[in-house]
Length: 262
Image 1 (tube, rainbow, N blue to C red):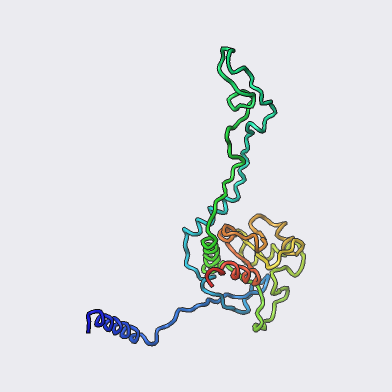
Image 2 (image 1 turned 120 degrees about the vertical axis):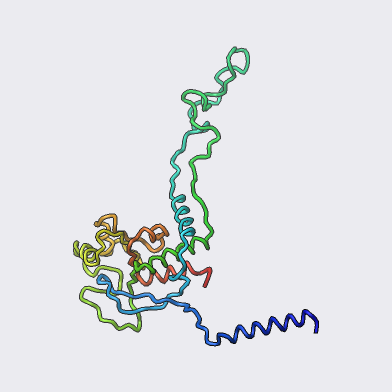
């Protein structure tokens, strides 16, 4: 038997021995459990499985930093827009002849070197400060932000489960919406759960500006916000001390931000 053949037998033998050493090895779980709650009491009534890649992602602060910087760069307006030569009202005629005046050569009155002339030469304005980030990296940052809130106990999912059959408390519902339009309803919710000094973010499945919750949030302080699920950014998830998300919105996030990995 050649040396290569003996080496192959040895490697196969070692692999067989290693595999048979742990015949009952455990497989890591693929899913984690999220609690479904009623609103506004936030009473739990069911659990449902969510893939680990979505709500149990390892925390990577460097990726979160990249996403936040990109979002802030894209929000910069770049309002500085000084007028250039083509934006001024003066004619294009030379102010003095090229030769014979005994003075330095000059161009037209729109030149930036002249009083009342243009303010910028060869400018690239209005300024564009936007930066790019690969979609996969940004989606990873989104999953990390949601996973961080989930692991810290800051994520509250509001919704119903088909097999739950739970009884609701008076005034509760399985929708992320206030059941009545009393002006103090949101104050009661915030005080009951100890959210008075916290940043609270509501993310409904379908945003309706005429809904009771949306109207109540518009009358409240800046610490309580409500956003359309399409408008939520990584910064919003990280800034919020409590995330109250409808099940439909969470399913939307899972479908959108795991399409590259699942």
